[in-house]
Length: 274
Image (cartoon, rainbow, N blue to C red; front, side, top):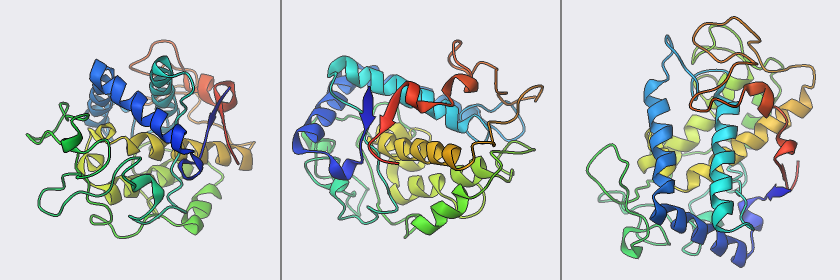
């Protein structure tokens, strides 16, 4: 069984294996396919039209499946690799270990946001950005510039306390746990982290930055925590809802998975702690 660990507890060897698997996926072209898929859904998901990956109840199961597909791709390179998660309520500064040169590298230079150190810096030659929203072909970050503070533990707990998963109008205006976690309302958790990292993480091609996977692995872990806290509050809507994915409807771009298939993460992996 795959165990997803806090990035702060990874050994030197686990970090190296994770980075090496990322680089091999990138070289093969398989990595960029994930970036392309994510960008297509960011652009296509709208509040008033069809929405699957974002601004909708299926935000959480969609990303759970997306991460599972990516983790399996990594494991096809190195079977020992699992997706780590980044608890940004604890590791909340630019000096945190995930931004070290032996792991993800640090922030970008002030001139153009170009990441200058670590295995994903342009100079390392491993990480040309080819699925992009502009002409810049290098990884960019501006840690703590777009917003100064990452979400706090108290803010996370306030969202986890919400007993209803989602509600009409089932979009970025909804009340409930999903939308407050996604960040369109309230204290803004998930979206704020994307903006805090900056660079490509602030765009539809956010998976260009490997930290995307660590961020979403933590969002996934928070969903699992919410499920334990509210065992009587399930995924909604159940049926008959236009433009969004009901409990037993298949999710694009896959034709073999429904939200109901993804409610129990322990069928696929566990976390190192609750």
